Image (cartoon, rainbow, N blue to C red; front, top):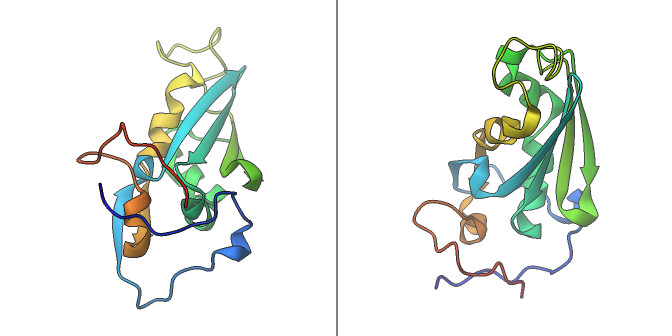
Length: 151
């Protein structure tokens, strides 16, 4: 098992984890390596929650998952509004996307107009991760059975 950096167990504010210096080596991964998601829908609105696998990854989510970035990811669904809600004690961000479900389940001609699958769209977004945080990622080639213990 790879050695993991010591990190506080409780999620902290974004300010507690400053952005990496420009000279810090980074790598691009899909968001799903740093977080998991939950989605729900009501009418023509979808809620997508993105939850960091580890508190050390939360500041990257706050920095890179902006309302504009998520709106661009869903450009093909033409959201009328994207609202972001930060949930730092949960290490999560909730996005409310209006106008993305073709009028809702009962109005849409699309066979899969439910919002349940939309978290997969957001989890496919690219995320730039400093090499120092790579041990906290989960994904292909990593042991999914190990726990995300905190030091």
